[in-house]
Image (cartoon, rainbow, N blue to C red):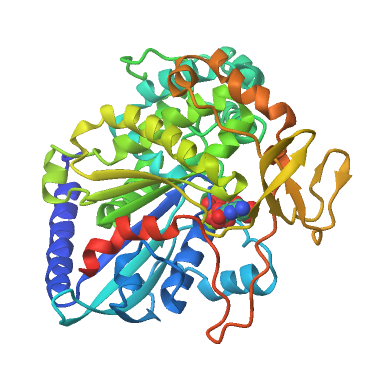
Length: 488
Ligand SMILES: Nc1nc2c(ncn2[C@@H]2O[C@H](COP(=O)(O)OP(=O)(O)OP(=O)(O)O)[C@@H](O)[C@H]2O)c(=O)[nH]1
Ligand SMILES: [Mg+2]
């Protein structure tokens, strides 16, 4: 990464910026908190609930600075980065609280600045600025491409596509590339078709039924303004991982576009956003993977390993010696824990911890403190016990979204029902050894309701003078880990 004149100039520019930020930081302590997770993981809801809790003062017994009464005030400040959209906090709060709907999907990066006045433990008054950056986890999973050649990436992508359940979704695309001659003349039409079939395959993998996580290049499924551009029009070819593309060949064309993707999309993200973060929370919809089955869970584990690798990217080369990722705390959070009874929260956390530990072993040198939590940023359910036959089952009460259905009934969005969410498996060793061992969970799935049910945001008590508080599960623990030490 450290070759070429333009990159040396860039290094100089970056170190100048780092120095500037360092200087500002002395007078005005700032923490940049990255919030990421794959599509629908719960990023927007998490940030909205976190900011709402800080502005209003949520019920956060484990977030010591707030619980201990040391936070005097918190307020929003103008978003400082001119090129980044502002996180639409007010809009999302309106949707969640006033309309009792979940916010719309967001596909771009966004940012929000929060200023917190607090009293230090020694009594002195201070201000901490918190910049919260919401960005798609798909962008993070692109970072490993920086260290991969087109040929390596092709070989890995094809190997992955030949495994089930991906193979059945890749048939048409794999057939098409088998008909291509990589060393033959470059061919725009063949490239267009290959890119389209490849993108269709990625989209099919992401589908709820398969819930695959590891689907780079991330912008193929969220192209934004780059849709249709050459940088997004390429695909893997069946070429030797250490081969060299002949001039003017289809292979050379694909390779050039792959490199363009890296320099137009991936490197700027690394430089302008990722490398400036101090803290990171990675939200994981583990329940969606459970619902889709063992293959999805293994894929999620591979994606987490990929994410973990990102925190090591560039460490140890010149580029990063000058400008390395400075993230020193990473929290992996299983979201939507309110879909499970309290008795399963620890188990959900244990499963995620297990996946992250395995990934962390590959990245022992991250140098960051890592923790794991199962949380619900906005708790949409309450707990109850329901009699089924002779058993009293630990259940949850919630209002299914309009149009959701279970047991032959379709809900209107205004009816509260009790469901038995099922138990998560206890035998983690068995769970991770092979697909078969998921039978424990699969068996419970027969009578479990949660897999297809999504609930409306909760009905809130509006009598409080300072407006309604949002109920949550363990959001305060997440906050304590992420910024508690900055407010000492
Ligand atoms: N019950 C419950 N559902 C949640 C919670 N957080 C998120 N969800 C559900 O998950 C969906 C996605 O949440 P978002 O916060 O929009 O997820 P995101 O990661 O921002 O998604 P994209 O913007 O599409 O990448 C929501 O529409 C809700 O249905 C939660 O704490 N509890
Ligand atoms: Mg979002």
